[in-house]
Amino acid sequence: MGFVKKDWLYSALVWALVGVGAVLAVSIFDKNDAIKAFGVLAAGAIALVSLVNLLTSHAEGIVARLILTAGGAYAILAVAGLYILLTP
Image 1 (cartoon, one colour):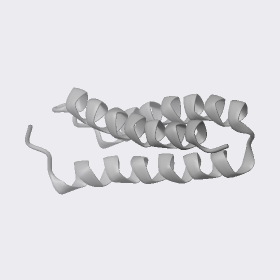
Image 2 (tube, rainbow, N blue to C red):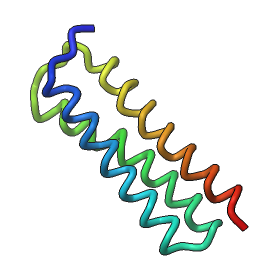
Image 3 (tube, rainbow, N blue to C red):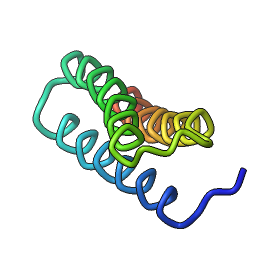
């Protein structure tokens, strides 16, 4: 795929933002609203990585970066969702 460290940095930054957002959503909102916030976080992750790719002006590997970033964000939100389901 030819990822360079900068591409991983962008993905890791988005994952960190999604993780912080998930923790805030779980701690601030009730369970139903937190699940809704997860949808907003997932959409925001896709929009943010698309914006980063637009600003960096290199289209090579954009699909791979979108899949990598979205997959990581979905995995983080899945763990947060399991936490919500398993806590009383």
